[in-house]
Amino acid sequence: MDERHWNRVVVTGGAGFVGSHLCERLLEDGAEVWCVDNLATGSPANVAHLGGHPRFRLVRADVCDPDSLAAVPAPVDLVLHLACPASPADYLRLPLQTLEAGSNGTRTALERARRDGARFLLASTSEVYGDPLEHPQHERYWGNVNPIGPRSVYDESKRYAEALAAAYRRTHGTDTAIVRIFNTYGPRMRADDGRAVPSFIRQALDGEPLTVTGDGSQTRSLTYVDDTVDGLLALAASDHPGPVNIGGAQETTVLELARRIIDLTGSSSTVRFVDRPADDPARRRPDTTRARRQLGWQPRVDCAEGLKRTVEWFAGPAAG
Image 1 (spheres, helix red, strand yellow):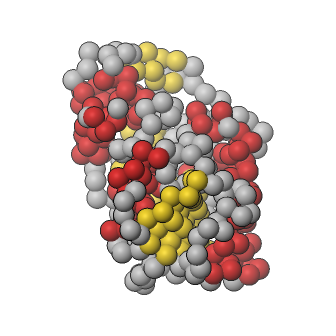
Image 2 (cartoon, rainbow, N blue to C red):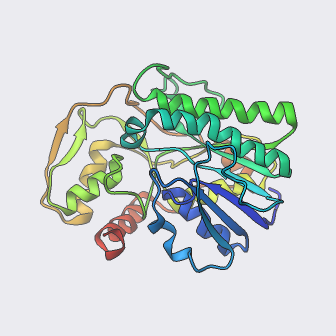
């Protein structure tokens, strides 16, 4: 893997969950960081602790606007495109905005990378595999996506964004890379964003029943946010175009996850089963051979430790 030093970096969606951790790490590595976010799902609180940093700027702008990056001086060395509603609660509430983030937003970010000769990294998702018929999911798998289902606004947004990044690479020679992020969790997730880990933790801490969809037998492979950030930056620092899966190796059922969180919190909560959403994937686990061989990446934080850290954050004053 090549080593690169970034002087000036744009992080679209940088006030979101993963984006804020990326901004933090880039500052630690000595980069000047321009965080561009319309705050539709991100929060200024996620980057408030960076506000006084001399190399950090928060720009409130919608990356779907072609002029949204005009305030960022040239040249930029790296564009990390994360701007997009990422949780089911958000993309079902903002379906058109989600599609626009994958199309117009990706085009804006790619154009800036093309003009400045910057490395461009698209934060794609395991959702491009849909409800997969292949297990575990390798990057060569094309997926099983319902193109008109309720989840399609996110799935197809990211699939289109991947196609656009690949087309810029072929047509303009833009230095693009695609990372497919699997279920990431950790501090700064919103308690109400609808994803399993924050929902279960909030319910357990409040003594409410944990709402498990279906019979809870569907599986997920969780990745602690620090490991996800390591993977994104490892791909950015390489010459690899991707796609590269970044995700955990430990596959767990949703019901097992709920019970583990009840135990971690010491909660008296019970489990309540609710209807399973349409097109909800039955199994999800990445094949991370490519990440391991090409980037030297593998997750370091196991699920027990990561969930412990996350529960502690949610129980502490920062989450309030």
